[in-house]
Image (tube, rainbow, N blue to C red; front, side, top):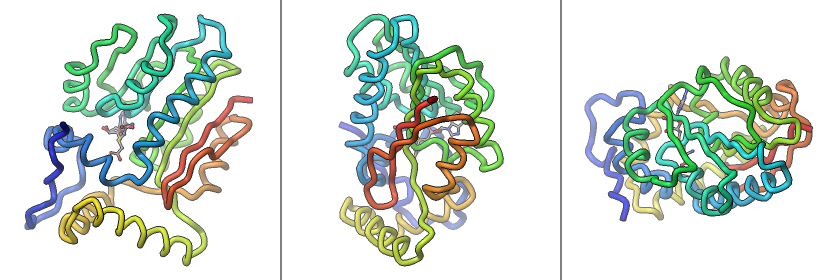
Length: 243
Ligand code: GEK
């Protein structure tokens, strides 16, 4: 069973910016499940959608990237959904602590994990790319470049899955979903102190876009059809096709 997230349980005299270090990596599975409503649906479903799409492509086009793979949840879900040996998945994460752990826990020879910056690692021609909850941690001025790199790497018939926390133009909708998300965290046993300390730590690290901003960026990067296949409160997931 995953170790319980207690990172922000005690009062901290100085709250430093959130980092994906060893203290976070060691409790990450518990932290993300208790923090993102729909995580346990989005990860397996996005892998299922990617797998079904890969099946429509020739076997030579089955390479898939899991960018910002953390402990490999999306990679593992894809390996489960797609049993053929033609699949290869490359997970990339800039956190050495995450990569060390995932390298120890995932033994399927179809998967490999690299420690690196997704803005820089070379991307080979791929049939699918999964960006689950990672774009929000990329500096806003680099997001267009990242999506353009992904679009360039994807085969013309390829697919990108993007899952993100989103913001809303309507203040009432924003307030409703913010309040419900707070309740979700409380219901998952996070205290007011944990919630507020983590919020402060994330302030400079996680910047959110609206649905419209995401769609505009997908279009600027040269993508075609966009289908929002899931939304739970302020968490959404998109299937983004090259054509
Ligand atoms: C999941 N997808 O479980 N290059 C590489 N990795 C990065 C970069 C970067 N520039 N910036 C941040 N990361 C996973 C969850 S977590 C989301 C993804 C969350 C990595 C960072 O180290 C972290 O592991 C991941 O992106 C974001 O479905 O914690 O809310």
